Length: 335
Picture 1 (tube, rainbow, N blue to C red):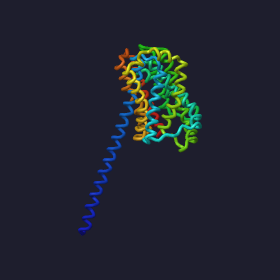
Picture 2 (cartoon, one colour):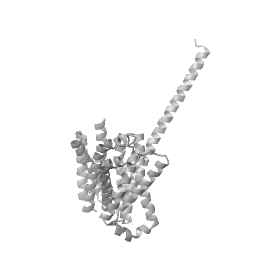
Picture 3 (cartoon, rainbow, N blue to C red):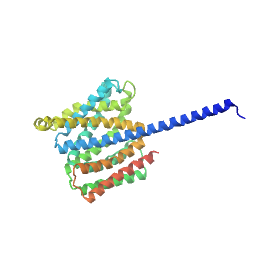
Picture 4 (cartoon, rainbow, N blue to C red):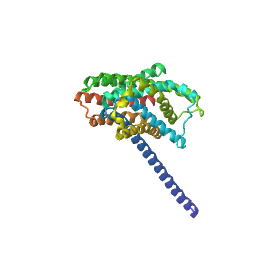
């Protein structure tokens, strides 16, 4: 028979087990809530950034994409520097050694942003989203030749579907613009080059930092700071200065509110993507990124009253589904 002491011990043990189980459930709920919240924040900021840029370039008819990029990067530098000074985040000091290592990546980064602005001015959001799938094709080929990485048949099959959807989408696009499509294809090459070059440069960059590490905040500050002088040069090269002097948009307070908001959104993408990646992982991040293109494309067509046909809509949907298949194929390949 159990004595009183044993019964008390059992009661206490049962109580502790219930408390432990309750704490475990609470922590799981908190993690799930954090993952859901970070995912929603990432999707919202990512979609909003593209839609706001399209609104500025098309609805306002702002013909200075480089200037818009420059102002957005200036806002990002201002915010990140302020947070670093206040001690909210930590960033690496911008030494000359680090700048020299990072400059090649930054040239590609600026080219990627500028060509994105140019293409978005002429092409609707849905077609830009579908054409961006070419980036995955170029990146996959680049990985194969530069890093000897071999992809399985599912990946190549989904890439082939992306190419077919992009070609059929272009053929059936009622608002086809050759200039816009050219800029977008260049953007795909630059985006893939940025992704491939970043892998090589990051290891070298870490070696020349004081801490031996380079976090996301430091990369955001580094990229955006170095883009400012290069952006100023490009403004003169593309003769945007005369346009800025003559346009009445810069005298409209509402316009400044919108472009400043776009700068905050650009920085929000960096923060929310890092938060979401930390809460989930690369697998969920890539899959959500692909699924995110579907509501973005629909919103782009509805908000900007894009003329479309059944064939073009089917091509866009086909391309978006191919993007989801690609993400799933990469996940299975990785596991």
